[in-house]
Every structure is written in structure tokens, then in C-alpha cells.
Image 1 (tube, rainbow, N blue to C red):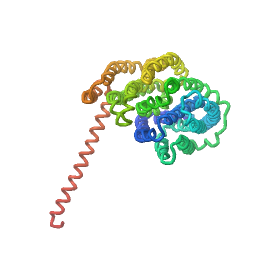
Image 2 (cartoon, rainbow, N blue to C red):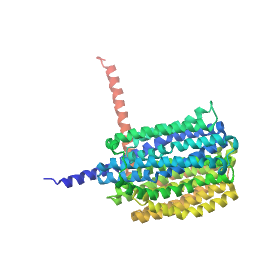
Image 3 (cartoon, rainbow, N blue to C red):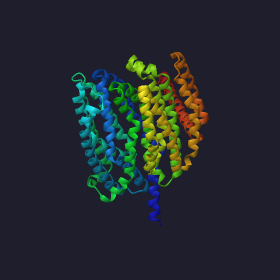
Image 4 (tube, helix red, strand yellow):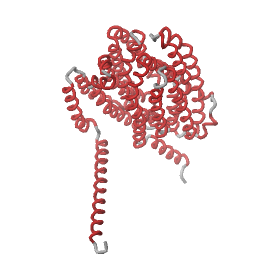
Length: 537
């Protein structure tokens, strides 16, 4: 007779492997990429129209309102990330029956905390609009209403992240990415459609607010379909609060610090220079940080995979980590080199000569920072996924005060270019600290870090050469040479034997299928010709 415990263990092992299957993870990464590609393309078209329609001051306020909303999302106390990690961990251990109570408790807490965040934003908005930010008096009233609407959406924004996290822990990326795509397009196109009727911030923000409500409702329906028993679990279970708050508390501290380092530069620009300068700084920032949609697409899938695999198979976790670093590097490097080399032309074509003169150096510097930060996000996801958010917070604290002091002096001395320099210097320190932390958590990743060090030693000078103020023809020629040589170097020095075999097999299979299709088509043609020539034809 078979042992029931042995059968259960085998079943659990198969379920865990299914959640970290390479093909499933790759397919989900593709889903993430597709869901962000359409909004990214739409942003290129709609942002210039929106700036022209509402003006740089209103657009600056619009981006600042978004940053306030993002910063106050820390009122979830880290429960969104904690929920994703704990759901993935329970799936890895075969404890699916515990999920409804866990998810219901987390979502209930997130809604309550979101309401507290709404009240906080409403209370500070008058001071922000009237005194702290240099907003022109003629648009202060509509700016205040814009902040109020952003505040009202906070509970839904916070709980939507929790709902999405539950689906991601189950590796159900297909449907949630369809929703993300539709809502993302709506949030970009909707404000532009308002412009023929009004150039005020109020209807522009109202359109975005409605989109957030619709997104929340759809995610709730999808989550209930994934966990049918969840409707009975929408109550706060006191015994589950402790584990959620313990993990989430460290995440909250990280969420307090991280926006200070990622977004405070724009507030400093607005306070020390002007809201118009915020637009000149934020616009290239928004362009180059879109590169993160590649790394975020990968890490959104790998975060729950790290949590699920680390429970029982650390060698598998190390394999995932190494490949994730490699793929993020291979994706971000050519994008960064292209952005640095062609920054003046890109800004001129997109936003005009004035923006190009003001923002070229900013874009080049920020592009390098995005490259470094995208790599640092991999060990950050690992550290959090295996349950050490306290280490993330401690590493950020080492960066915070040196960065704030550096940013203050550089912004005062060099304006928005100084802000970009300070931000990029911080990302370099971020990279070093987080890979050190990743090695402490997972010593098996030592070889990955060594390879990355050599890779950066070779590629950072190439990026620097791309920023030289040469003629367009020289820069295009340089970019062409590097891009032509890159595939050879990748094949010889970066890809492993297994990865080469996979690519070769797919290439051979693709050509084999193409040859078979041609052979079948040729046989059909010959058969038809013979039938036509036959007396019976």
C-alpha cells in the first residue's frame, strides 16, 4: 500500500514545481511585457499633447499629485508585498486551505489603512498647494481639488495592489495583465480626450480616478474566482495580523525611505527652482524609467518564484537569481546605450528643441541610473521574497542621508542636472549594497555577482563614450558598431551551454517546420499539376 504522506509530498512537490516551471515563468514575463508595451507607446503620444493642452505648470502639479499618491501608498504598511510573499510561500508548502483567511485579513486591513491615508492627504493638501510647492496662484484651487481626488482613490489603489498580488502568487498573469493594459491605456488617453472641453486639472484627474475604481472592481472579481471561498474570509483574523504586520512593518519602513530616494528629487526641484523645472526634469525621467517595464515584468514574476522555491530548493532559487540578473542586464544595456547616445535627437523629435536643451544631460544621466537600479532590483526582490525585508530597510538607511545631502547641494549648484547626478550616484551605491545583501542571503549567488562585476567593468565605459558631444553621424556609427558586436559577445561569453542549446533547438525546429510546410506546399502543387494533366482531370 502506498503511504498517504508520501503521496501528499509527491503531489505537493509537483504543484510547487508547476508554480516555478520555466515555461510558465517565461510566458508570464511575456504577459507582463505585453501589458506594459501598449501604455508605454500611448504615453509617448499622449504626454506631449497633455503638456501642450494644460501647460507645464499644470502638468508639473499633475505629476506631483501622482507622487503624493504613490508616497502615501505606504499606508498599506507593506501588507501588499507581505500578502504576495506569504501566499506564494503557503502555495510552496501546500497550505492552500489557509489562503482565504490570510487574504481576507490582509485586504480588510489594507482598506482601513487606505482610508487613514486619505484623511492624511486631505489634511496636508492645503499646505502643500499654498505654501510648500511653488504653484502659481491662478491654478491653486484646481490643484487642491486634484489632490483631494487622488486622496479619495488611495484605499482602492492600495487594495488593488493586494488583489493583484494574490493573483501573481498563483502565477495567474494573463487576465490581470489584460486589465492592466486596458486601464493603463484609459489613464493615458482619457485625460487627453478631456482637453477639447476643459484645460483644468479637475476633469483630467477625475478621469484617472474613475479608472482606479474600475480597476479595483475587476481585480476583486478575478480574485474571487481564483479563491471562491474568499467571500467568507473577509474578516480580520487576529492570529494572522502578527505575521502580516511583522513582515509588512519592515516593508513599510522601506516604503517610507524608498520614495524619499526615488522621488524626493522632484519635490526638491519644485521647492528650490520651480514647477516648470519639475516638468523639464520629470519628462525625461518618465521616459527612461519606462525601461524598467522590462525588468519589472521579469521581477514581478520572479518575486513569488523566489518565495516559493526558497522554501525547499535553494539551488533552484540561485539558478533563478543568476538568470534573472543576466536577462535584466542584456535587456537594459542596449536601451541605456541608445538613450544616452541619441538623447538630444529623441527629446527634440518628441518634445521640441527647448526641452532638448534643458533636459539632454538629465536624460543621459538618469538613463545610466535606471540601468544600475534595474540591476539592483533583482537582489532586492530576492531579499524580500525570502522574508528579509528588514535587510532592505537597513541598506536603504545607509544610503538615505548621504543622498539627501548630496542632492541638496547639487540641485542648488547645478539645477536639474545636479538632481540627476545625485540620483544616479545613489543608484550606484544601491547596486553595491543590495548585491552584497543578496550574497549574505544566498551564498550560492557568488558566481553571478562576479560575472556581473566584469560585465559592468566592460559596459559602463561604452555608455560613457556614447554621451560624448560628437556629431550625429559619429554617434550613430558608434551605436551601430556596438550593437553589431554585442550578439557575438553574448553568445561567446554570457550565455550558458543549456541556454545555447535551447536557442539552437528552437532555431532548428523553426526552420524544420518551415521546410516541412514548404515541402507539403510543393507536393500539393505537384499533385494538382499532375491531376490537371491526367486524362481523368
